[in-house]
Image (cartoon, rainbow, N blue to C red; front, side):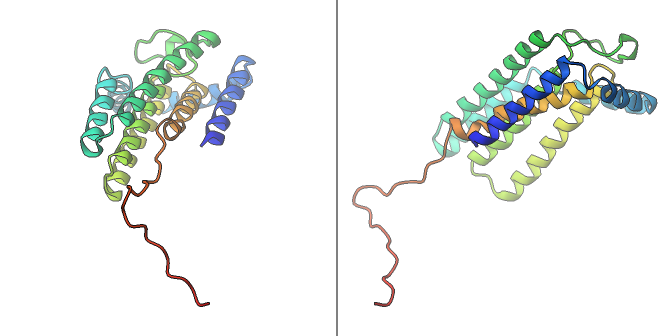
Length: 217
């Protein structure tokens, strides 16, 4: 996991450097132009509704409640505390990175919703990815059965993807902004198992230790 975290951080650093050098201008413009060309009233209404869920005030309470569920089922408070800390630090690091990069948003004539602040990385995309990832991780820590976890994971990941896509469709972010947010969120989420490692249970004193029967000879 340390290697994965390091790789994601390096990927984010490289994308940030490319962003500062304006090497993705053609890609950003091409994706934005393609989405703007396919706007309709119905898709705009749907994208606006989806994007409004991306930076919800319920983000922290949802993680806290999920942490309480884990604590109730496992009698362990650390997963919930670690998850909430990762979301807070992820959001703060996103804000810091945006101030350092000071990237400009697309032309205001393309905006379909009011926004403020810098463009890179996207706050909605980062917040939704962090929320989805921490809830999926907490579901695993709670010991939920495999099938419900797969369904929950699919729904949450699909939602986070749609939030990022909605920011592009609404004309308030470049595609590089959303990808940068996903890399940043993924780096923090990959650190969760490092911050709350699962260690194999040791037999208590006096408990019998199962041994494999000796082989022939």
